[in-house]
Image (cartoon, rainbow, N blue to C red; front, side, top):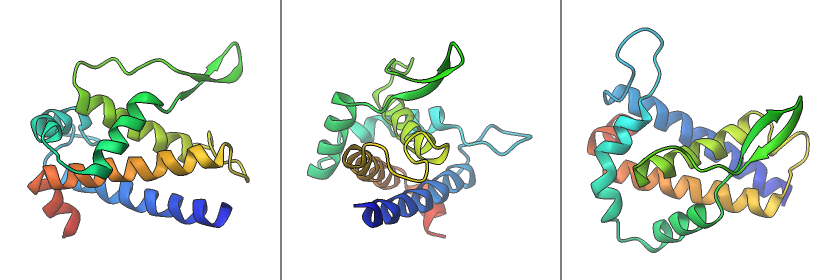
Length: 150
């Protein structure tokens, strides 16, 4: 399981990094200063397409993430804890992309891996579904897909 998860984590990092670059290259950025992607603007741009995606893997990914969303690691009273609160957004595409970023953040910042995998089965499913959602987003945005592939 560890070898498969290690490979999936590398795949997620590569996909996520290329995706963030593509967002900025396609104009979904903060406009000046630090080059940060504007995930909300992107979510707004693909919201309608998101609702029309007819793909079994995407539907499964969305259903899983919505039913069992990733938690956010927080500090409470000086201790690490997991927060289950839903993102504060009125847009489903934005919510799903926030959850995808939580998966990435939990992995990258050590919430799910600290020399060993925590909850390896769940981590595997969350990584797989997050990548499915990101790939569907590429197909929902020709400009981002073009930047991603260039």
